[in-house]
Length: 396
Ligand code: AMP
Figure 1 (tube, rainbow, N blue to C red):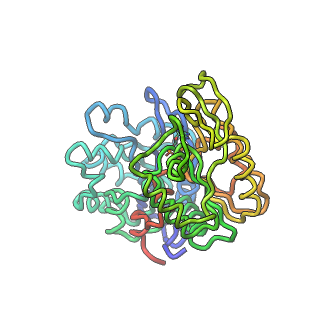
Figure 2: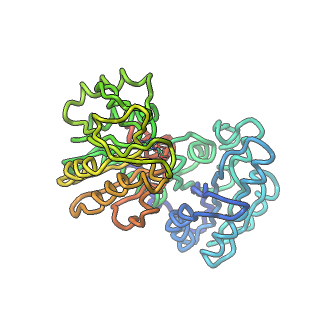
Figure 3: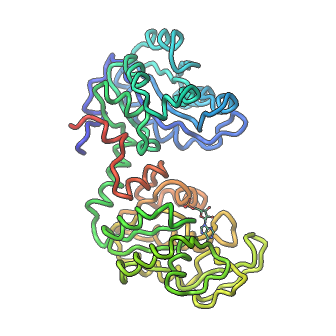
């Protein structure tokens, strides 16, 4: 890649500041899913093995009140990381000041320090999220080089990624390198046919993604709630299904522009209420009853989508095909997941967020070439927009 990677850096004996993504879900001070910690281990272990002194930075949740501070304390993550690594992880309970500086100074080669939640700095004037120049400079002063491995926040310009990077020699870590390679290659130099599958709730959240992929992919499949605004734009009656009235004109324009590139559902599982206990039936997209709502793709749609996918050499999937959280409306998402998993000779990529959660829930993690760890960041990439967290890293 065009950016320096961790292997381009001399790290032995150096204090290496590492931005990781430890923004893990927590309940009552306990980590409920440690995937993000696991995803950062390759970089952390490499730096330990190469005798660096590691200073790890991460945010956790949003910090707007004192209550958020207590809820989003990173200490449990330091404890868990220590267990996983089988070595001490020093924790600095503050994001600046004597305690942090003393702990950084006392690190020896191979030692690891985790700094308190960077967003504690947001309580007093959004210093982290607003990329306060003084804060980035201060953090940079603690180390010799900077590694950014936090793909999950790469779409944001914050003090702990872009701020630090502007003061030190910098490189991307292994996770960031992998994310950028898979997503970047898929969108910018895909092996064709390139099929994109988009789902989820709203057209408005993904307009730029749809536009960019209509430009770059050979086929764009649209399922999930957002398909109904397109179906409405085609003049179909969609009953009580999800509709964004103010996006109908946009959907019409995209349909005209896309021609047969854009594929929509042909049937749907409708329900008489937004509930797993509701009455359900499968109907053609032309026969949605007035008081029912489409909550999943139907079996003919899954067949159609699987047929479009079968020759694909590159597949990017973002967003569930229905309300997959409710078992009665998960079949479309499972069907599409299966169809992608069955492709033997294709690079298959799942954008983060709900589609990654769906893949995990179905136990299909091993069947994809790459499952992105960053929902917002991978969507930004799919929009064709450069990620500030990557742009700010030194070129090779
Ligand atoms: P997103 O965050 O935009 O990817 O949207 C994900 C959400 O879309 C999930 O919570 C799904 O339950 C929801 N969703 C998918 N299909 C539908 C649908 N047909 N009607 C309502 N919500 C849907």
